[in-house]
Image (cartoon, rainbow, N blue to C red; front, top):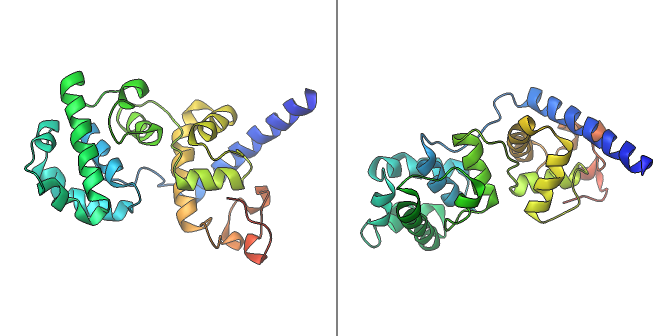
Length: 225
């Protein structure tokens, strides 16, 4: 038991050091999606599934001018919303999710995006990742946003051994203070895009290389997820 506690303590210290260095490297690490209020962020996060944030921001620039309320999305003519979001991919399913989510928002939450995890998870197209984005950005409720970057880097850094997003979320919550959960998530995205990429991580450029259990992966060593 003592050995386990020492290991947990060391992992917490390493996590704080990793985060500190990544914050210094990416001082502007924040949500990459453009939005002004919760409904816009909900729609943007649904569109961002298997699509780049850059593409989503291009689409939503005009989309948000035309669709301002949940009613606007729900009552849009058949095919109109699909055409507007076509370039984000999977547009039929995404349009369906947006309309269904807006229907629930109108019927159960008075037309406003709700502000709790339990309520957000009742919306079509909204999972824990999306819910944590909305809660953190719009309601000031910290959460760990487990996307593909957070999953990959948390495993590579040895902070989690799981594939399941909820388990990864719980692992990070155990080793970092609550106030750090949101910024950790954003730093994972920025570092995952810039350096610790999936197929060929740029380990020689990594500011936390000495703290990583899998350094020099580009030199042929076994790579973690």
